[in-house]
Image (tube, rainbow, N blue to C red; front, side, top):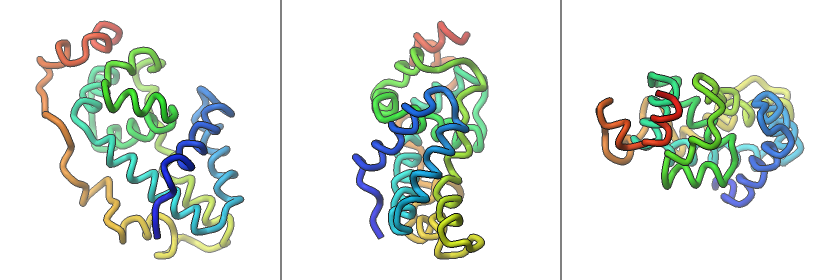
Length: 179
């Protein structure tokens, strides 16, 4: 099975952003309802695309941005931060991949860059359609079978690692706003 084409994935995400600009719960419900109206294959394809984007955002520059914004980075907070970034829409995501300092204009404040529930919208939509409990036919299992793991078997983080002393120089706008 193939991932949802990037244009279709971002169209759904951007529609969710338009429907609920600063409300992750609203975005979650929008996406779950939109996906539940699609064929099962498209729900799985959305999960595959979501995971591809989470993996693409696994970059030390973005991790430095989260460190500045929240003051810490853990495995879970890093994953949820990347979900939040995707949940801001294609333009914000693409700009942040190129230059994480662009997040200065969109970050509401520390501890507000978390969209964990984005990880579960495809599963919830699939479950709604099938009425089944999660099994190996569900989106997450299909994605894992294709090697799209953002967790235990994830690829190495991209870019150059940093130490805390590097942060003001790396991302001066974010540093000024949050430190």
